[in-house]
Amino acid sequence: MTDPAAPARTLKDIARLAGVSPGTVSRALAGKSVVNAETRQRIEALAAQHNFQINQMARRLRAQRTGVIGVAIPLGHERRQRLSDPFFMTLLGHLADELAARDHDVMLSRIIPDDDEWLSRITRSGMVDGVLLIGQSDQLAVIEDVAETYLPLVVWGSTIAGQRHCAVGVDNRRGGQLAGEHLIAAGRRRIAFMGEIRTLELAQRHAGLCDSLRSAGLPPPHQLDVALAPELMPDQIADALGRLRERGEGIDGIVAASDMIALATMAELMARGVSVPGDVAVTGFDDLPLAERAIPRLTTIRQDLEAGARAMVEALFARLDGRAAPGLEMPPHLIVRDSA
Image: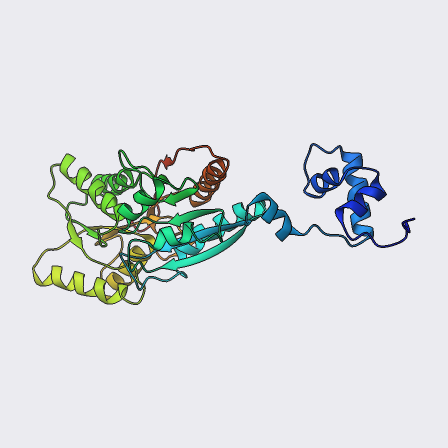
């Protein structure tokens, strides 16, 4: 006869003590609502008394799930950009919170693409249940190819007509247009775009600025290449502003491709004795926490990263359940502060 005082080591032991089936014990300890509250409390008390925990690895193997979501950041456009970039860290934090709430872990990868198989290697690894990509970089063709056969893939980035992959992000073109319209309304007429346009998101921000200038009958903006890598940014901004000055092409407004470029640009302008916004008005893009704390505080285009992370994870888990959840294009919002 089994000793009732002996420690319970298996689901069957707990089930015997509780007078229920092992399946009921499993569902109760997983917090399933199908088990009534009184039974679940009795099972939880027995599990605590016997220091019993579900073998999560075994459970995941039975369910053919790893409990891990891959989060990858492809950097084909800028190999020197860092994971510590404030944009990445802000979005990563929101994604990690959403995944933790669903009892999933994160496997993080910074990808420097060296061939067209990098994403396929992640999806075929057997180490993750699904993949979240932060940014499309210059890897749109690779992402589209994998999305044709791999359902649980969701990307932070732009939406374009006819794309196969599920993308969540802001309407970048409209964001660039809002920044341009704001500077034009403030009387700015000689406007520059500060940032490279080799990625889809930044190219669309530049296109939106061009739209606003064209509608106002103004010439296209000066497009000044500035990388997103922090160690390159200050020198490239200084060089770009120096070239404009040498050519006698004065500017009175700058639309920066990101908040970090905008903040570095303001620092360089002020170091040259150029007042912001008196001489040159500056706008950013993202509305990172740093934008509010900058001096002067940064006017920027806000993309709601918390809502975006939630939408990405919701779409991913719908796809894990076999449903082809659509992407989401969120509206951008102009946040007016001191810099413009």
